[in-house]
Length: 188
Image (cartoon, rainbow, N blue to C red; front, side, top):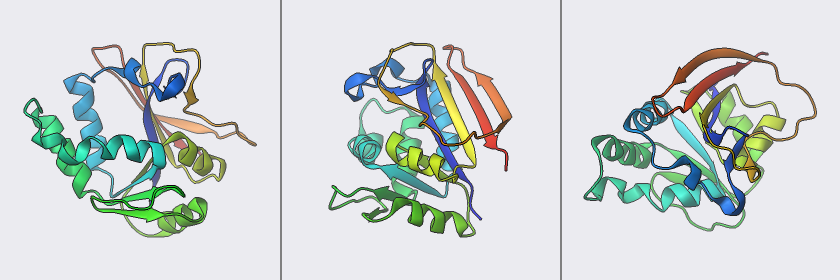
């Protein structure tokens, strides 16, 4: 069975985006944080995206390594992003590229099927898609990269739950910028 990991950057008050889908609060990541995200993504065998996150990632990373100011880590990230198999869940997109397949039907049924297969860890991103997976009890690990900023409202990282989800702390790391990465596994 494959492990499903939900991880994103978020504000101290728990939002992945401020009102208007604004993520400028995260600023450009430090080299150290960017390289950490690169390693995290390189460990994934499959990336699952909701529509909004897919649109954000696919608007930049297919050619991110060709930008004249790209750092070695950004070049590696762009190449890894293109090479990693991806699944996008959307009923409004009609075409995807870059080693990606589109699912327009039942996301939970497909994620359950993918998770039941033998394989490496899968990452899931996008608040709406991840919220459905969290409510369905499919998320095995949470990676919370908290930035020292409060935005007051926006798109929350966590969804409302019907039952508690108990977690075990796996790792905590503080970056020089004050960003804190925390990993938890779901207690089953």
